[in-house]
Length: 40
Figure 1: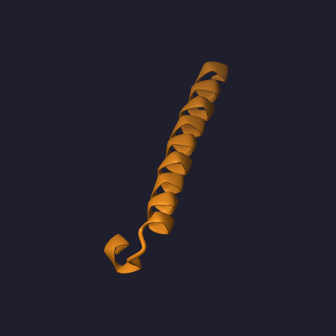
Figure 2: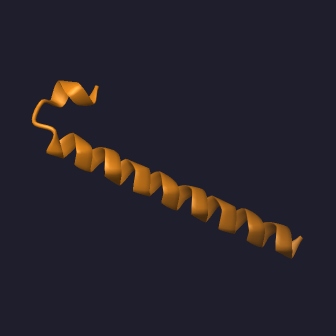
């Protein structure tokens, strides 16, 4: 059971970090583009 919990925590952390990375990239791209409508 301990290993399962560890694996789940590790997996969630990895996914969460990837999500944060993706959000930051989108945010930077959004800020960089002068035409905000292009983002949507």
